[in-house]
Image (tube, rainbow, N blue to C red; front, side):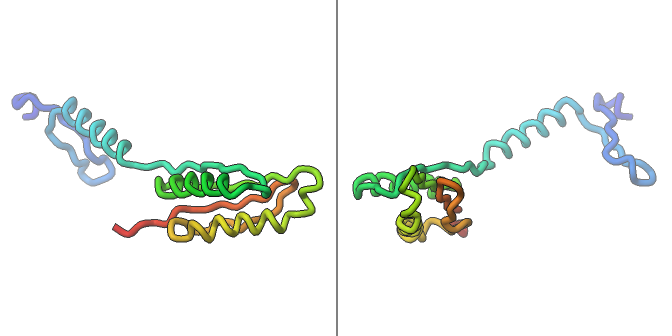
Length: 136
């Protein structure tokens, strides 16, 4: 019957009893499936982890530049890993670096959620911020 109408006989599910088959143009079916997958890929957003590295002895202008960059990353929907590097004797002032990271977190709290609080790891202090999910 499918050959007479110019269609292909496609088995939809072989687990059912009896197996379910359908008459359709297989080439067209594959084309539509691929098109749907391609459209779905276009619409999905992969979350990237962006990193901002700085020193705890940062000037006010540099702070504002990093803050604007941080806001843009978060508004775009990316995670941000903030790293303060401590060299040599700077490790004695880890509390100042933690204060700096907390200041960043406070300034962007309307766009972000703290995933990981500032924590000393070797010669670095790392904090990770997640963007807030917007309700649509």
